[in-house]
Image (cartoon, rainbow, N blue to C red; front, side):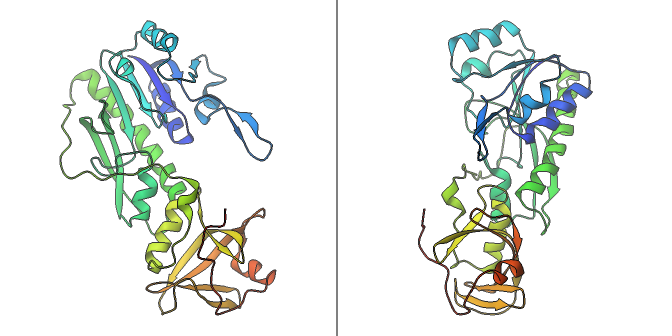
Amino acid sequence: MRILFFGTPAFAVPSLNALLQSGEEVIAVVTQTDKRKGRGHVLSPSPVKEFVLNKEIKVLQPSKIKDPLFLAEISDLKPDVIVVVAYGKILPPQILNVASYGCINVHASLLPLYRGAAPIQWAIINGEKKTGITTMLMDEGLDTGDILLQEETEITDDDNAETLSKRLSETGASLLVKTIKGIKDGSINPIPQSGTPSYAPTLKKEDGMVDWSKTATEIYNFIRGMYPWPCAYCYLHKERIKIIKGNVLKGTGIPGRIEKADSGEFIIGTKEGLLSIIELQPEGKSVMSAKAFLQGRKVREGGFFDKLQMD
């Protein structure tokens, strides 16, 4: 089967690799244009492009998805099926209809739950205990197409968006191979989505601001869901601090107040329960333990985190 693959981040790489390992013919890869990254603003390829650089696979990087020349090029490739894994742009009808078997999307949720760009993050933030992968036939809606296959996975208390994403990327790869096989042998029947949908909108940098008026459990889930980007953060004496890891403790305190800041413990009051900050990253510094942070600063118990966004 001639497959045209759309994908950009590291999440998409296991799916592409699985297709190649299964012997499918990947005729070309479409990925987003190179982006400037890091402090040096070095122009860098996407993880998907980096993966295929040493392979004899054509790479397409259109700056505009509706570019007539690009649309003509993929039409000339005559794909049997298009596979989309976290490409990052909405595909127009001209692409959705170009392949004889349509477009298959690997989506990191149990649809119709968490339609949208950030399903892994929002599932953790909302305290879900399970999520999964859905392969579906794409249509013009936002993750509204018919379901092909689904597989569940548990969200553990130790998971953050990074660990869960890695696990789901492997699940997605194996489910994609099963989906392609099922399409070829006719054993899969697409099923319309049923149930009440929920949504997982794109996260922005400013979405990481911690709201201390929430419960300790809600903030704990928020920290996990926001890692590694945009990362949960707050301000102390106008210094921006990213919270990398925390823990929920029993007890009472005033939301946003520093209840303890000695003996290596950095404990903050919330609406219900206490949040112990385990690891954090001051602006411009490396990730450090709460103990190391407290040793280098005079943090007063009874003080409060700044309430306003400083950026």
